[in-house]
Length: 398
Image 1 (tube, rainbow, N blue to C red):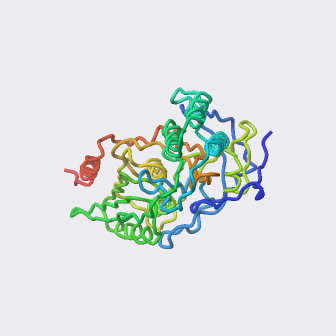
Image 2 (tube, rainbow, N blue to C red; image 1 turned 60 degrees about the vertical axis):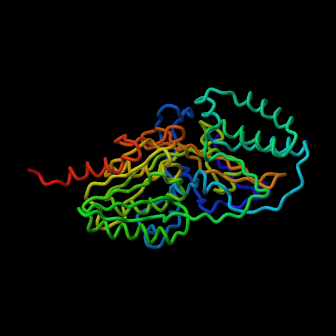
Image 3 (cartoon, rainbow, N blue to C red; image 1 turned 90 degrees about the vertical axis):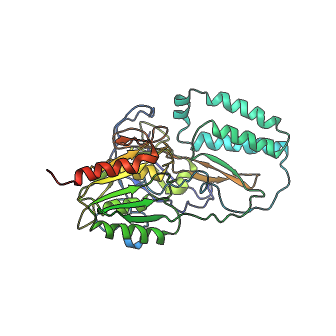
């Protein structure tokens, strides 16, 4: 029987993710039965309420947004941002018993927290029980920490999930990556504004300045192109606030169900359980409400590719289902999970595990499916294709 689950601070001691948001799922709305086999399409929704996530002052959410959207604030940037930039003192090598105990700890968290565990087995046709047994044997046979870590990383890779990861910090040098500008705005000679958003993480002043500049330039632009090719994600609250000032109508942002665990209860404080699917919250829908006085009326295009992941994909959903934009490029990576980070018990490190399943407004899952653009073209040619179509629309009738 469904009910409310509450966070017990005695059980959990963890820091909340910097982009974590608090959700109270509407108790009055009972979600319809939901098929958790998301390889197909599904429907159903429930409302949510709360408060909008913190955003840069220049594009901060003002009135009109009744609830916090649980679909914002996801963070991942493969190859760069997902690796914690920290140094750790070296520890003594783990004993064989410690390596086995730590891997069993990881397995336990996978089984109680990982939102995509069942669907990955269906999609890739493997048995979790079988690979669990296989990799436990590999860990027991490991003769060193290096062999143990290699076995753990090999196990993680089987799930093809950028949001799922194990990180070992011993000896990792402090890194200060040089990041490209978050937002760059360019106006073509014929009045088309190209707003390049290379990432969704970093100093929020960058987004306040860059997206604020884009909104100001859009007032005089004839058309708008938002280029998010290669964007590794971060906080899609920035693009949420941005698009809300471009439209004059609500935008559906998709649906989400959260796997209830001690970690997600620590994050949200309280979660409503779906009586039809114990251990999961009811399917909850999100919406972006318009906030601007002068919506953009010209043609709008968004550029995406297979490196657009996580909150970049959340942003692509917003534009695709806004009714105002056409997407150009390649299908996005297909990864969404709003992961929690859990310290490892023996190694200097952590494991990061996705906690939700996110659907597009039409019911198509993001995980392992991605967002398909309206116009499929290789990434390098996406801008040219978008500009050609836009200029054809802007050309005076003969």
